[in-house]
Length: 307
Image (tube, rainbow, N blue to C red):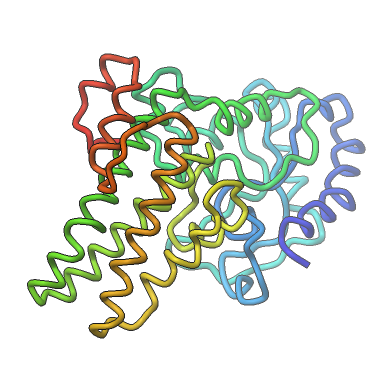
């Protein structure tokens, strides 16, 4: 059983009863679910995931007023539930299980007590942080406060911010993959060529998630998460090939061709979304055309690679 399903079953077996029995007056003010840090919150966990940083349990999210009224007692009641047991924990491990204020949960990822309030705030939040703030599942939220913030983070990114981030990733693809990778190979700097490939893959993944209006997770899950995207998910194998295929002379020639194929597919999707119209094979001019659609003078004035 994966962690998300396990969390739901534990909530339904223990958590819901505990809340109704001990805190009936606040039952409608306590949101429950599982979201945040950890592979299980993305549904990517397996048996190996349980060797560390994999506590049992679920999340209970409460507003400030409820926290003042019953926060301490609710935390004690949660810790007394019978499913708790010790787990191996890494130095940087953390758990999102248990009782947390809604403002604290979102501040961990957005830097604010809720959704970003302006374009610079949206632009500053890394994609992986937005992915962790909106992953998992909400089991109950009668009050709707937790879910309203979650929905804004999921679908409310301003178009100017998406375009700025997209332009930055498209030009990074051009620089790293189409320009620097073949030059590094010609110079015989094969380590630098591999770094250029890594930069290209990261930028391409970021662009593909933005073209799908989705938040890209932490790097070790980004290729896996791509499989669930509606647009350009078929590029996953090509991107993985760039990182894993042999780097002999024939392999490097083939990788250059794969880079161009990936770029061509991204250009086709950019055109399908009417973000560019040029016939260039090189991605750089497409990035500037994407940026030309930005309406905010503040974002349009930023360097093309910022974002």
